[in-house]
Image (cartoon, rainbow, N blue to C red; front, side, top):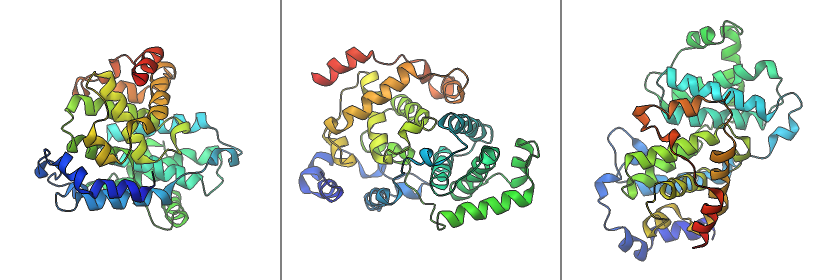
Length: 296
């Protein structure tokens, strides 16, 4: 199914009839321009279209001095920074996107990786947060390893490399919209957010489109909470059929089951807190059981 077909599906009368049980006011949220009740669907369609412009190549094979493990360590640190500064979750997701897109365009050395990650957070926070941290905060975090001038020149370098276009679609925003459209409870949404945030560290998910990744994370969370599957509402709003999401969903469950690195535990620690319903402690679905569920 092409993007045009999926978007047509989201606008057709049949889909509208299926969705009419959802009150319009849940689509909007005070202070969130992306969830404006009048323009929410138009914004959603626009961001889906923009995804095509921001699909990442397998850039790591062209980076001679850095590895996927180094990237994972950096992203783990970026999660800690986001939590310590109480930045929006959107800031973290956008910062990782900026990091990846810059690395896809520029060859870097490992000594500058933290500088690039820090600068990506600064740029993303200016875009997403009302009160972004200043350069001085990152000078302190990086133990004065870089100068203020270096931070500012790196910020300019990243923006030029991305042609100053940093409104990159992120999975977190799609995930929130899906949850609002379909009355998903907060604990289930938080579980999906936990799964989605874990993928930020795993380079093998970097090439996935944001909307598809968000859909698969939510579907896996629904299965883990025994809340059914991918009903008509989610199919219409996301544009994905359940069967399209099964391969990615199995990959996500494999990540939950086998890829927990104790040294990269920022996301696990964060979502083990009561504020996040301790969702990191929920056991993943047995891989064989998941296969049976998807075949039934």
